[in-house]
Length: 113
Length: 113
DNA sequence: TCCACCTGTAATATGAGACTTACATATGGG
DNA sequence: CCCATATGTAAGTCTCATATTACAGGTGGA
Image (cartoon, rainbow over all chains, first blue to last red; front, top):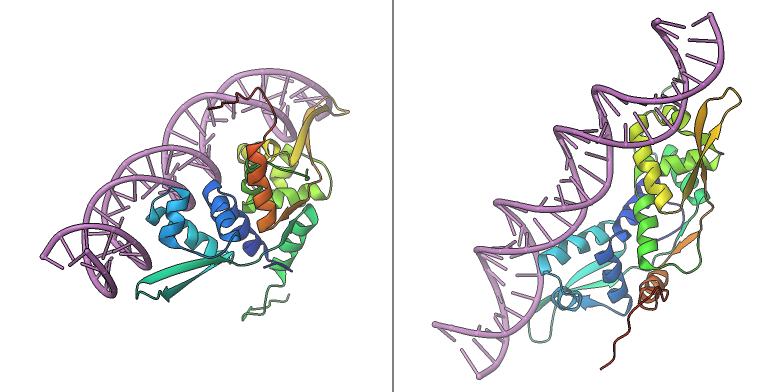
């Protein structure tokens, strides 16, 4: 979760981290993996709400979730932190915007005059 | 614009940078100071809209604006970038949340049982 | 069977942010 | 005097993220 980012990826990360609850979610997960219900209890928020925030963090690639079967047979979804390291400066932002231009040759049509 | 941040300050920065237009504003200002109307023209957006985004960036402490009188007597508001360097990791976030606790003794009432 | 856990989603408010349009002001030059 | 430039703000709309409530299903144990 670092290296060269496109502005889109950078924005996804910034928007994902830039919320009070999600900041606390990251802080909780920094201590180790937790399953959803337990995490909701710790944060004092409803489970559906937590789901939304986790989705957002997952789409940004900051956390990952895995459904597991506990010893007692109950299904539990554990989330854990994906190590990230984003350096935020004016230059970083310029790099991200530049990266958009020559973004992967995912079947991009080239024009010439 | 770095060092130890409270979660509030960190959130202000992240939320401020986390928008496509504001990313481009920062990129433009990275090349040097620009006055509002000129910047709006470069970005191809309306001036009132740019104002909103600039306010947001200014509140987060990422840019500063100064009203100046040009040689021809016209008032022009120049904005420039405030150098910032935010390192974003799980640890950084933990630090920010910890910093909230013992935030400046700005007349804080202490209780004891 | 009922209760206590867990996951997952749909339906629905609500509120903040983003954006537009319109207007007020001031300056200098043709 | 009118036009072009500039700043600044008020008012309204509209979209979307946020948040709540309510439901669906599954398991294990008393």
